[in-house]
Image (tube, rainbow, N blue to C red):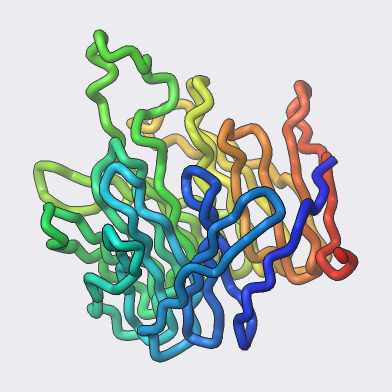
Length: 312
């Protein structure tokens, strides 16, 4: 059973919307309705505030760490329609180095692609569009837009693993060079969509439209590659339902296997897979965090529950 090992006093002056550890688990970034992003050094149950990043003009909804092979940086998105990229200098000072201002409404979700995919950042907005930033070195970025991605707004984006499920991760094989440029999105149109990059058209195209939710899709999470031949996406909804979508052949886009993992009594806001892709963390409006794992019979079982109202 999972237990709370410590608390971080963030000193945010309003509601916290996101908290993300870096890849090494040594730093924690948080963001809040107080318009700030804060970065902490974390060592077991000790923490120290090392930076408070001010630059947004509205609530900051989400943050995403860039993979360290591209630099020590992170991205933040806000109600102010902006995505800001922040970088740490050699002297340990944090500052913004790029501002992405192309959306007409709140930017609700951002995520960096896996490092092997390339330096890409997907950004989903309430204006119904998704922009994909691509880094080209020297802190320079270009972007492509997906218009009308979700007609009533984009709430979530999540990248696929760099290598399609079932690919042999042996550098000596041809499969190793196969890179999957795909991501999933969820929106206020009750849909989950899968997008794939077309090298021929230099554009992102919808590959699949997953229907089943009866209310706003609040989050999507593409599971890490587990070595099996099946790709998996989890999605959660305003109505409290969590769905598990699976596809055995991405090139055929046959996402026709749907399972209702669980129906919660309140809205489900966020989903997160474990590194191994076998445990799904779920958090929602009931202020509880639950961990779920699939049994050998295919049923999803709650293996841990944490009520955030009762932690000390």
